[in-house]
Amino acid sequence: MSLYKIDDVAKACGLTKRTIRYYEEIGVMPSPQRTDGGTRLYSQDDIDYLKKVVRAKEVLGFSLQELHAYVATADALNEQRFDYQQTTEVKERMDKLIRMEATLEGQLQLLEQKLQSIHAVQQELEELRGRVKTGLETLRSRAEQNNENEDD
Image (cartoon, rainbow, N blue to C red; front, side):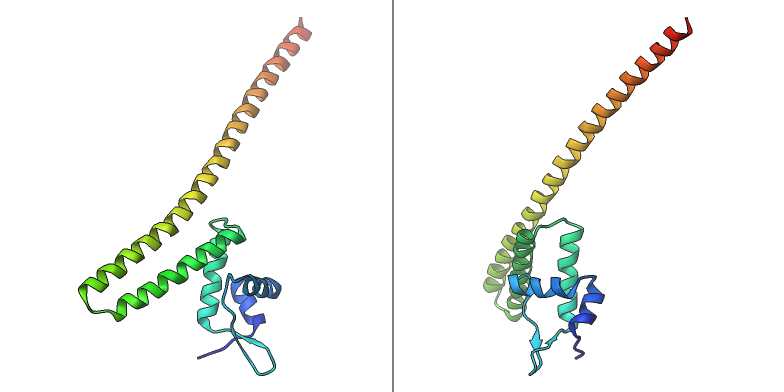
């Protein structure tokens, strides 16, 4: 298994080393393994995990608090998937799927809240654009009237 230093991880994920350390500090990402000298060593799984975090932050516009909740839910879902795969009894599998469904519902609710916020901002901007267009039309009309009056 290949291990990477923080410089390599930062380049791969488009983050600064400081941001990676901060994410670790606040619990957005788990602490990586370290050398005896304390140097952080990251696996490809750590890099993939950070890329998911970056995508959630950039594409979905998550705040750090939302990121934390998103990551915690994703971790819980992964654990539930693993537990499900280890179980063969039908009733246990059904129970595990029910828990997975509830976890997914929480994840989808988080996304829905974000979408509602985005739509609210979009609506505000569209309303402002409408007022700007109305203002421009009014001013253009006045300018044309002034030009006509000057021509008389």
